[in-house]
Image 1 (cartoon, rainbow over the protein chains, first blue to last red):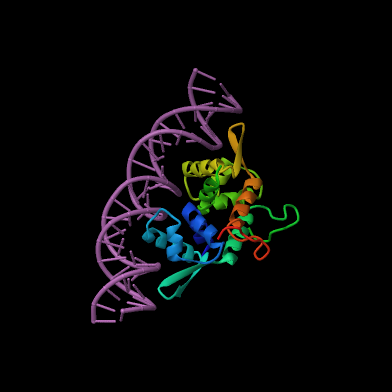
Image 2: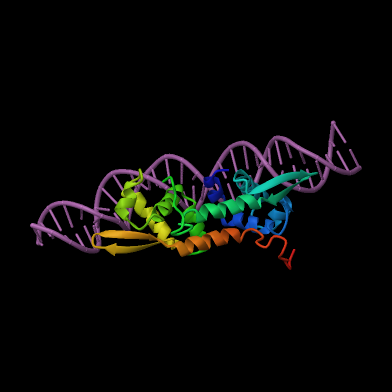
Amino acid sequence: MSAQDIFKAISDPTRRQILKLLHGGSRTAGQLAEAFEVSKASMSHHFAVLKAADLIRSERRGQQIVYTLNTTVLQDAATLLLDLLPRGLARRRRAGT
Amino acid sequence: MSAQDIFKAISDPTRRQILKLLHGGSRTAGQLAEAFEVSKASMSHHFAVLKAADLIRSERRGQQIVYTLNTTVLQDAATLLLDLLPRGLARRRRAGT
DNA sequence: ATCGTATTTAGATAGTTGTCTAACTATCTA
DNA sequence: TAGATAGTTAGACAACTATCTAAATACGAT
């Protein structure tokens, strides 16, 4: 769940698409897999990467596994990105670095 | 300069560090290279990737090449990221799904 | 217990990426 | 023009990643 995990996770277009689908609401692994032209195994791999970055959460519901977007971490990622540029421009002074 | 170019560019820790250094002000290729434990050739490769994503701009100044952060694109990237989550949360209604 | 459905894990493979050294290009100075 | 300095480009290589098929696991129903 490091910054690196997050940036790696969102560097793949399929995974970004998954996140986009999930922002329309939670979906089962199967539902998500249907939306893509790749095998279920490959999708499962992508889920694992997204989970490692904590961008999604999973919950078993009977035979299915429901994936839910973790909006908090996604917002954190955006913050990390904005952190790469002078946020306050002239207003903020950074102590370290 | 696609979204993919941008996300690929920031997926590497060295390149993120370069961006961070550049937010302290423009630097020459040599100055940037000094700050890292990799060869100048490797650094040059990273500059090329960042340039392809339009995250940095280059300008030759005599024998040196000065790199400058393109804050606009970095902000765009953050926006793209936030685009992956429901911005209005409860306020927005989506037609499909 | 066995079967069927849903999903993940294992193992293999092709393509991508980060790194290196060596060679090349560009600019300045003498 | 020759030499020195600053960077990039070319080619090779190891490590990583996305993908696949096949096998394994988890759950529910019969």
